[in-house]
Image: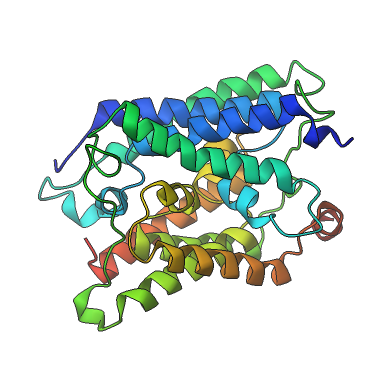
Length: 157
Length: 152
């Protein structure tokens, strides 16, 4: 059986998913307007800027930084044969163009993929439209960056 | 400062960091939501854990909204969740605005290989140069977009 189908592996994914969703609610990143109020730097002079989002991402990075350090002392994660480090290392046009397109989408909506999917819990109007479009966009992008690790490895070379 | 909420923000950030740490140390996987979501179609043999993660993420948000109600949006003590409306000056129907935003988010995170979680949390924590560039670009463009559209 594939190691990714064993119970400890799936239980780890479930614990991680549940913590992640809880974090998105507690931090209120599920509120598109709150995220946009962080991104609205024009409100800084008037004192109307909401810096909360910075207080979300910094501790998240710090905890993950420690986890990365810990993992470097280990040959493998607990429930799989190897750490799946991202295979791309080059700073190239798809990275920059992709990040820019995502920035436009995020600035228009105030929701990035995690909050967008977590919002299924609270089901706002029109969420389905966003999610279908998110999936369609992702599939369209797969023509530029083929999915499947082997194809991607070939491209990364 | 409008609705500044540092304590829930810090608590939520710690939970997100913990979630990413658990997935990395347990399964050796990056908790990047666009990547987990974007590889749900074949030939992914890994579709099962991806679905488990996404479903429990929704359930985690729901459970937290019952356990810690009234933090803002969502759950029994919260305001109803709402997507933003298109700025009136653009004269674009809301559905089109939301659809275009979703499409750009899906396309951009796929070809840029990550979003706020994969590049923003995990990539920065890994000190990946690619992620520093991606995060700089998407934050700058998102801030510019909000400035140009005046959506807030």
